[in-house]
Every structure is written in C-alpha cells, then in structure tokens.
Image (cartoon, rainbow, N blue to C red; front, side, top):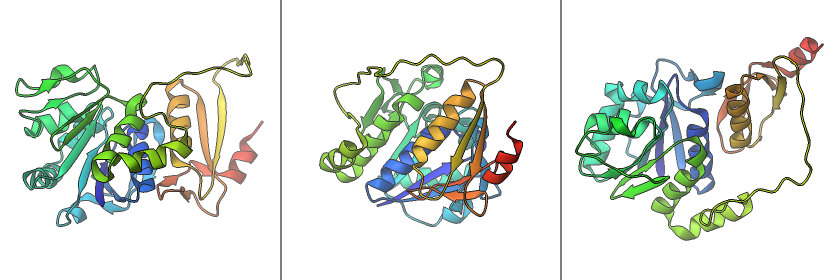
Length: 266
C-alpha cells in the first residue's frame, strides 16, 4: 500500500511519527513529504525531520491513503497549501482513504469541504471550527466512509492502528500490536513498580543520544514530552553525521554530534 504523509513547519511530532512507524510496520510504503521548499523540516518542539520527497514532486503519484498530522501551526499550514489541497481533493474524488488528526480535521480537511456530510472528530480545542455540514463526534477515532479522524497526540496510536485496520484488516492490527504491548481495545492500566522521586533545581538538562536503527516513536515521544515540560533536551547523534535513520526509515536530524555533547557536559 502507498501512503502519503505531508509535514510542514509546526507539525506535531507524535502525530507524525506514530502513523509513519505503525504503517511501515504493517508493510505500507510511507512517503514523508515536505510541504515546504526543503526536505529538512523543523516541526514542533524543535524536532527536525528529513523528508523523503518534496510535496510538489508527489502530485502525480497515486496513493491508497493520505494522512495529515496536526499541530499548531502545522495543521493550519497544511490547510493553506494549495498543492496539498489539490492532491487530497483528487484522491478523495477517486474514493481514496484519507485521514487527519488533532487540528488537521477542522483546519485542513473541513476547510476544503472534504468532510461535508461526514462524522468526524478532532482536538477538543478545535472541534468548534467544524462547519455545520460536519457532524462532530466525541470519540478518540472516528471512521466514517473513507474518512478517518483522530483527536490528538495521546490517541495517535489508536488512530494509527485504525488506519492499519482500514488498509489491511483487523488481523494485521493484532499482529503488530501484540509485540508492541499495545492494547488496541480495552483501555490501559498503569502500576509503578519502582517508585522514584526526582528532584531538579532550575531547568532540567536532558541528553538523548540517537543512532541508526533506534525506535523513532520512542525517541520522538521523549523529545516532545520533555520539551513540552520545558526541559533542555539535546538530541545527539552517535553516528558519523547528524542525520540518523530510525528503525522504520524516519530520518531524524540531531541537534549535535555525541562527541560535541560530551564536550558541553559540566
């Protein structure tokens, strides 16, 4: 299956990385396309991704699924790209599967009129942006016809699994979810086995080394969450250059080389 996932300045890292990872695990050929002028895209929280293609070079291709991640201002930035609108509109008119999460359902798909007559969800802060022709639903993920919508970062895994189910069926979901320890249905529970209290004066400084073959979701979720908490996170490459190719092909661009990070340490 061929999947297009565009990114732009302001894209939410978790909402991009989890669908990329999960869909590639399922066997999809995911093209990460920059909707800007360069392959290198700095998305939210300073995460830097090297895209596979420029979006303008993807216009003539055919896809089984197009997925729009959210983010602020990423969703609005995607919604304002005429090239992307044209690609998605042509895809939808042919009956193709299309999806968006967080702010992207109202600020991109709905703004183009592509969710008219559909039930859809989105981030609670943005559902009021849906026009009257869209029926807003309070659910983590909504599948209505060929449209799949989701709410936000915390539901990105459920959203991605729903996309796999639409493309490959429930059996494929179960196949990839089990080794990942994902409970696709039935909710989650958490028990802390070793309770530890952390204390830090001032701004926490965090070193996150990355190397070829790392699990992209785990790295990007850590960077995203820690930087949301205002930690000073340095992503350091343990390879020969700053570009690191993760396990499922996401190209993460580190802030510095690991040796340089070591020299900075107090």
